[in-house]
Amino acid sequence: MISNLKFFSYFLISLSITASISAKEIPNYGDISIKAEYVTLNKFTNKLLLKTNIQINFGDFILSGDSAILSYDEEKLVIDGSPASILSNKNNINGAANQFIIYPNLSMEMLGDARLQQKDQSIYAEQIRYQISPQ
Image (tube, rainbow, N blue to C red; front, side):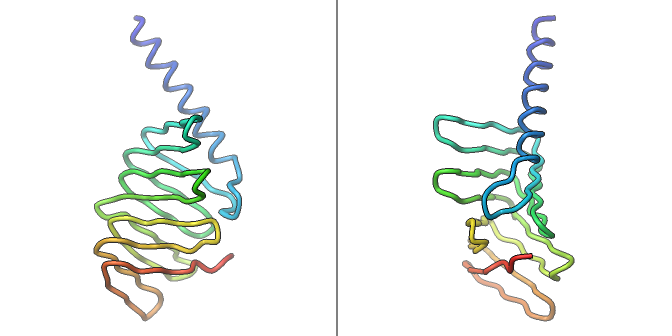
């Protein structure tokens, strides 16, 4: 019985954290919605840790991966995956890499077996730097 109460307490806490994250506006990212099976906010390191079935939506972009770290101090979002991916139907962008690093100015680094397709152009490399155009 006690283990059930602990589980529901953790579940409700994670739901409230997820709700506050999706409602919170992160500077220069605009409205951001984050979904993950496990969410941990570390107030000491000022980082948000996400694990398992990550989906991050901002603007017209959908990012997915296996894990992610949003560092408020370093002002970057790091998404790891096998592979991690980015998709925007409106901007006709589709990409994948082992790791994405996104900064508040919306510059993005794609690291490890990276590929990026935009309209009729395709790029394949170990590292791609890309500037996401603002909405």
